[in-house]
Amino acid sequence: MTLPRIGIVYNPSKIAREELAEAWDSASGGAPAEWFETTPEDPGQGPARAALEAGCEVVVAAGGDGTVRAVVEAIAGTGTALGIVPQGTGNLLARNLDVPLGNPKTALRKIAEGTARAIDIGWVEVNGGDPQAFVVMVGFGLDAEMLAATDDDLKTKAGWLAYVAAMGQALSASELVSATVTVDDREPKEVQAHTLLVGNCGTLQGGVTLFPDAELDDGSLDVLVVSAEGPVQWMETLRAAVWDNGIMRLFDREKTATSVEAARHGQAERIRVELPEPRAFEIDGEEAGDVTTFTARVDPGAIRVY
Image 1: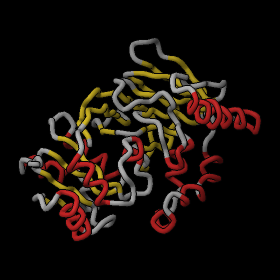
Image 2: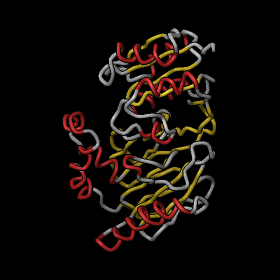
Image 3: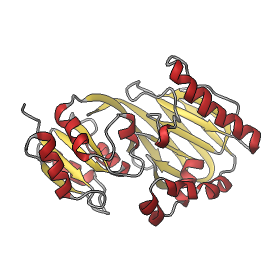
Image 4: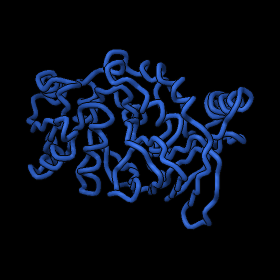
């Protein structure tokens, strides 16, 4: 079997080149690969562009969600395929694609022996800035506040449990705000929310399904608006998330997402959100500063991925 030309973009703080090279040699039967290292200043866009310039037909992102997003941003729309060796805390796109976690050789074998499929990506413009790619989700509120409050050293040592330690601070920072939301070509609406998330795929750590209707190739983004306050509304929101949109969907795959008063689901090809005051913002599980306006849009079938 002749493999396409492979470029491997790797984050050396997540995995050593030597370990990756040994895994690739075993998974591919000794096929050649070209290597491109990320740096703190360049998390992957530059190395991925270098891989494109070198003629690589598949670019593998070996690292966390930040490395994956950076590589996607560089190769989207070029026809070059994406491979993933998940080495981060969340590994969210990898989870949604059933890429093996914690085993670089198995993940690389999926690339060497598998077939690429086309998936959507999202683009978001924050505060009028340049478009940034995302593959999982963006938004403000509880999730973003939790990321902003998470201690980086604790995250390195404890992984996703570090987010739990930041939950209390995030809850206290998440107050209802009046947001102006424009979906596709509809009239703008005022919504009360402390959390608004726009997602491209649905599953998070621990098997939690945040966007039950989300599909990576459906040509739409999924939207979740949360306004829960007090124990009763939070219990209603958790029941809908865990029971209606979680357990019950195991028995009925055709069931659509259940919305409750304090947690509403929707879909859009494009959504613009305007806030009266800055709020912490996240892109694919990474803190992205404060936001007052953002516009997210779907880019259907923009990348092929193993």
